Image (cartoon, rainbow, N blue to C red; front, side, top):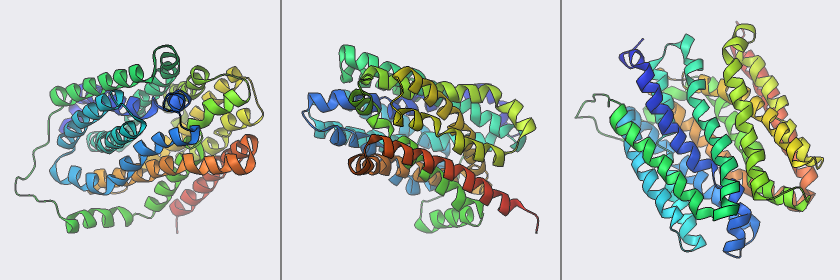
Length: 394
């Protein structure tokens, strides 16, 4: 194990706090879409673009942030990103207009783009392969806790006190993560003469794509982002149209995905002794159908929450397997490899809301949700088959 691995308890706690900050900032706005649209007198589909306003810069910054982390140090990039994220979140809470809020969310997404990839790459450097998936799962737990508590609370708090209070609270999580990274992590020593260059970045990315699994990893998470996360900003509006609830219920339904993820975390070590990652991928895609299908059939919001909990379990089966593959695509360029993972995943999340809005307009909510469910199932099954073929002995 590396020196970082010997300091695993403090290392992992600090990284988990950093990941919590980033995940809270990204997940709190989805249940608030209907509240924000009402305050600024705009359509729900326009307010839902705040999700894209965060996800798109997160994705587009990755080709630059990845090589910067590999060249200058992942911890240094992590600290700078967290402090910038904290500032952007406070600006979001104080935004006087929808346009100002969109700009602040754009800046928050750009800053958050340096957080989770840096954390994941550091875990990849610090844990041997046999312990890596469990360590990644523990880190991902922080994101799931953010999804459970931050998402559920954001709908309830937003209805009671307004969306600004929610965003102010997310800024405090950002501050906690920034302090943890500043005082709890030791920056790696780097050659002071190293300089960023396009050629160096291109070399890192070429090393990633020499691994034939790279394209499969990145295609999978892009499709996850489109098919699952594209529909989340519309859950409140769909529940309202079905007479089943509003922002508070939407927050609970979305947050239930995190509960399913925590069930996965508690079982992953046992499951890995009985099944391999290809089994996880195929089963995960099929299981993820549960939540969208429950809403497609106008289930009560409580039943939809349970179904989205099952979806969260399936999501982790597939996504955590892909995460583990991604951090090992190119050991000498881990941050570049995982930054491409984040680029793909958040590009899918940015493209998802407008795509789902088009499906809603053209097909109605039931058919749009069913389409998302089928896309998730096909993604998991097909990607498992393709991975198995790559690993089959010649």
